[in-house]
Image (tube, rainbow, N blue to C red):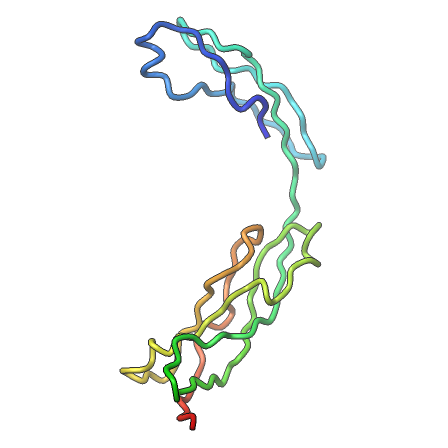
Length: 156
C-alpha cells in the first residue's frame, strides 16, 4: 500500500503534458517481519516539484499454502434427451491460498465443466474438463486431471 497514491506536480506546461508518472527512489529490504512500513522519497526530476515528495509504503507478507480440494464436474450444453455420463464426475483442484483464509475455501467456489458440444459431433475417447471459475484470491489454480472418459446416454 502506497500513501498517498498521487501527488501534486508543479512544472511548465510542456513538462506536464509529457509527464505520466513519478517513480520512487529504489529501495530494498529483507522481509523478516510480517509488515514493513517505510517512507520513500520520490525521484527528483529536473524543473519538477512534487508535493508531497515522500510517500509511505506498507508491505504485508502473505504466506501461501498449497491446498487440494475435490470438485464436482458440471455437465453443460446437454441437448434434451441426451446425458453426458462421466466416468470421472469429480476432479481434484490444486491452488495456493493465504494460510490465514485456507479454511474458508469450499469446493463449490470452483467451477469445473465438461461440455457436451466438445464431443457431440466427433465423439473422441475423452471429454476435456475445464476450469471456468475460482475465487480471485486463490492463485495458480490447476486441475490434476484434465479429461474424463464418458458415454452419451439417451434419456426417455
